[in-house]
Structure formats: structure tokens, C-alpha cells
Amino acid sequence: MRSWRGIAGLVAVLALVGGLAGYGWAASRDGIVLSESAPVPVEAAGPAVPFTPPEKVNPDSDLPPVPTSLEVVTARIGTPKQGGIELPVPADWERTDLAGGVQARWAAPGSPDGAYTVRVQVVDLPRSLAQGVAERAAALPLDPRVSDVEILQQTGDTLIASFILSGYRMLQVVRWVSFDGASVDVEIAASGRLIDQPGLEALVSRMATEVRQQPPRGQRRP
Image 1 (cartoon, rainbow, N blue to C red):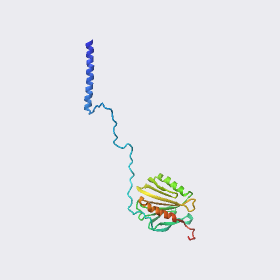
Image 2: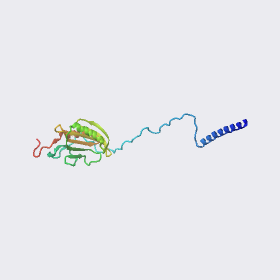
Image 3: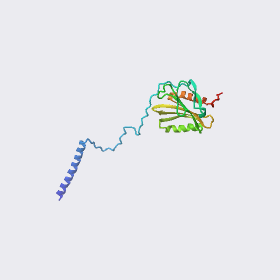
Image 4: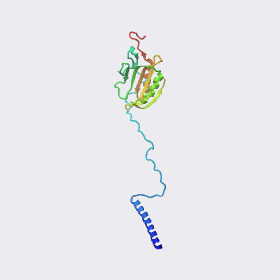
């Protein structure tokens, strides 16, 4: 009986040793290295947060910056019955009349992409100037045509903003005018490049300061 138990024990030991030897041989065949050390976290190979590349922007046109002093001529928009106005506009810029007859745009000669323009519109909005500015500042980031909007300056009658439009980085200077102090009567919006800001601000300021309502037909301005 003892010899039988001894033989059985010997067989069990040999089987265990054989299994360990076979596992070690298989591991070496698969290129697996066994280690008794504790697992260590693997260092990340890239940034931990998603990265969005900046939006591609076309280079500015090579026109010189808008000067702070431009030669101007007097232009009229609308009729006295429409609440028409007259104001100074750049003398050599090209005019385009827009729908309704109470809005017009002047552009640099040749109108290259990303160049500068100024648009004037006769309006009748029952809002204060400050309300008009605030509404445009809130609406601009929601405009699907523009992206990367940045409000640079906001006062009681003027909004200056930067954004990307049609692949170009643009600057816009908008000023509202009221003749009676109770409502907005005129909107003047100049657009250009960032380098045009001093010239555009000077142009819009002069236009807004000198804009006048057209006198009734048959009546001359004194």
C-alpha cells in the first residue's frame, strides 16, 4: 500500500514539473517575457485633450491701409418721403445701390476680395442707440456666415468687431445715428482688414457726424 501511494505521489510531482516546463517553453516561443514586478501605467503618446486646428484664413489684399483722411463728396440715399439722407462718402469709391432704394454701398476701386467697403442704410427702428448696439453685438456671433467673432469695442452708439467671413479675417465698424434721440434713423457700417481700423473709424465718425436728413422737395438747405 505504501509503495502504491509513493508511486502516485511521484507521478503527481512529475506532472507538475512537466506542466511548468511546458508553459515556460511556450512563453519563450511567443516572445513573452515573464516578470514578477508590479504593472506600471503606460505614458500617453499624444495630448490628453482633443485638438482643433485653427481655421484657415486667406491673406489680406495688398491694397494700402485706409487713410485717416479721405477726399469726400456728398451723396444722397433715398428720398425726402423715405426719410432720405445726405452725407459725405469717399470720392473715388464705387457706389452700388441696394434693394429698396434706402441703402447703398461704396467699395474700394476694383472691389478685391477682403478689401474695404462702407454701407449706409436709412432705417426707422424704435430703439435707442444703445439698444441697437447691444442687439447687434448679441446677434453677430449667431450669424451662420461668420465665425471666430470677437467684440473689440462697444459704446453707446458704436460697435467694433472682428470675425472670419468667406475665408478672410475682417474688421467691422458700425455706428448708428438718431436725429430725434428717440429712434435709430441711420446705420453706417464699414468693413475692412485689421490694419484698416484707424482709417475706418475716422471715416465712419465723419460720416456719422455730418449726415443730414434731406430737406423736403422744393426747399433748399440753408
